[in-house]
Amino acid sequence: MNLIENKFTSKEVDFLKKNSKDEVKEITPPEFYLSDILQNETKEINSFKKRLQSTQLIEDKFICLIFKISSIKGSPIKEKKSEDIDALFEKSFHTLLQQDRGIWQRIDKNIYALAFWDYDNKNKAKSILKSLTEKMSTAMDINICVGASWFPSKDCSKFDSFDNAVKALDHAAFFGENSFMFFDAISIHIYGDRLYQLGHIEEASIEYQKGLELDETNIILINSLGVCYGLIDMLDKAKDEFKKVLRISSNEIMSIYNLGLVYDLTNENKKAIQYLKKANSIDNNIFEIELLLGRMLYKTDEPKRALYHLKKALKLKSESASALRITGEILLEQNKLPEAVSNFSKAIKLNPSDSISLSGLAKAYEIQNKNIDIALSFAKKSVKLDPDNPIFKTRLTEIYIKKELNQASCQTQNDQKIKSA
Image 1 (cartoon, one colour):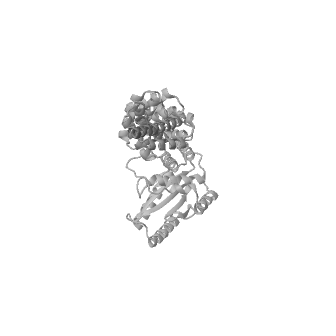
Image 2 (cartoon, helix red, strand yellow; image 1 turned 90 degrees about the vertical axis):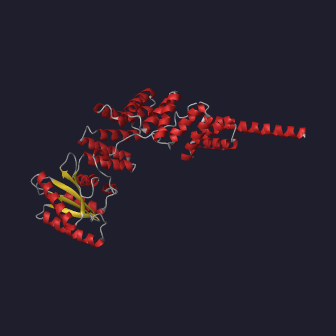
Image 3 (cartoon, rainbow, N blue to C red; image 1 turned 60 degrees about the vertical axis):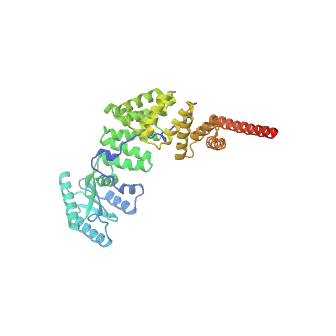
């Protein structure tokens, strides 16, 4: 009696994706993402972008930089020191930008934007700007993080160059408080991941596509794009992206697993199991793989093999309501009632609205003819949560009948006692 046929979705088993931090070593994600401001631009940012757009250049090229002062010797910046830092930046930028070499503007507290265009070549510009940053950092004993982007670059507008510098700043922040980073595909991936974390899946997918324009064989970006397509129910596109990864790297376990999940969601069970088994053969200590493989084997009527993988999943993650629920269903079918009760009870504790576990626990109690009132309560709740489920309704009816029979039996015994007395 398989209850999970239409109950298991990608919300219960996650797609797998590496974070952008996996692309670089010895890094720590920043506590604050400056790129969050791109979701709702301030008037200061809008003003700088308009200035940038209206600037007439002899050569249509410039470098855009975002400077962020994060701390003084590891301590928060005090107000008076902040005023001194403002003065230092103003003096430094005026020195650098004399004779209309660029524009600058403070866009937030301790955050400055700079566009610089009077340079012979990129290497010379990098040298000038990195030297400037180091001198300011030393002069005020402050930590400065910098993100930079070039214009022109691909199909980016002048406005885009500012956004790209912001993304590069978040990229630099991964490496600590005194880092200088130029915009690249990883910068885009970091921003895409931030959008993903905030639940903006479609916007994240657009960023991942932009990243692939810069690095078309980046398997982390390709997999991330596939995950986005999977989450917005564009499953054919998701398949294409995961297969693209496997053409580049045939043993990329995350994409193998993700492809198995997509085939599960499209009800192509044999293909789903095929890919999940392959993923399992590469690494049999990943919770999501063990859980989904167990689920698929149960779905295809292989409960013993399913139970093996589900138990492994629970060793990896003991508080998985999904694994506990499916395990409970298998044990109920095998008439291992105490074990079924244990798994269903744990699943309900984790998710009180788990209708399958509520109904399963009620059935296990009914078979054992124990806790009938509790069983009735759980069965009623399961039907309320899922009123169209015929199995839940049948179980509820059976419990009502069992209760009536018990009451009748009890009444008969009482009558016999009275007569014998």
